[in-house]
Length: 306
Image (tube, rainbow, N blue to C red; front, side, top):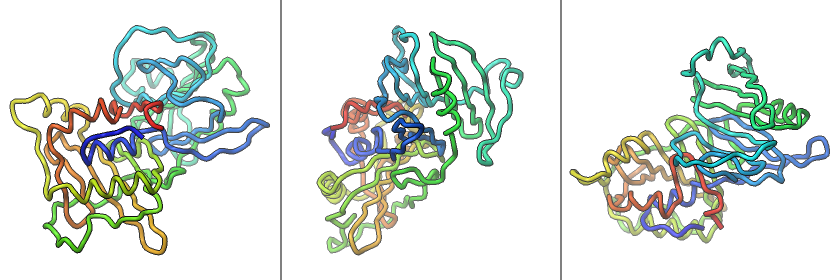
């Protein structure tokens, strides 16, 4: 697991990675589900996740390019099979003319047959109200058809994260030392990262990392933090992390789970809450998130996680 400094940096490190996904067998080939924003897609289980540079695929893979990505000049190999999650296409010129309305399990979308791109057939399914586009590329028309047929909406992802955030975020008042911020000895922690009102990605954390996170929460001071004025932090957080939130659901044997909610709101209310009181995040930790947690908006580097 990536080593991070600070409560929220640690929380991001635990959630900002490619989460585990269920595996099924289809047509003699093992498939696994990947998802974001409540839309799930089955892809070959042999595909690596996030095998790309600056949002450009370098092998058969799945890419999450739903937020800002670094800009660089890099070429895409020909003939790849790829699933890419990105922002909606609704603002493109000719969007209505070139797309066909479709309904997938009651969810409206628009389908765009983009033709051949770098030796692969490309089809896009655009879910405008979720600000999400699912692009499927493959030179194998059979595989292309199977992947497209697997696209479906979900309310809870395979890790148990709801599509919409449900944690309670409150400042509250400082509790007595006899009441821990979160009980120790969780059997696992489910991390859910949200972009606005939609689930972005999730991850499962084992008991050892869960204890580390619980200790960090317990040691943090009461209250919220603010980004210092006359620094670059307010502009960075305002453009990159506004509306983002993270929940960490601590699950125990023999007792109800405890959900911790952390968020970045323009670097104005930085911290985490257990629904009863909040704990602070130091402003200088914000600059460590992109370096230590390997978190670039919604673009995740799965190779940063052990």
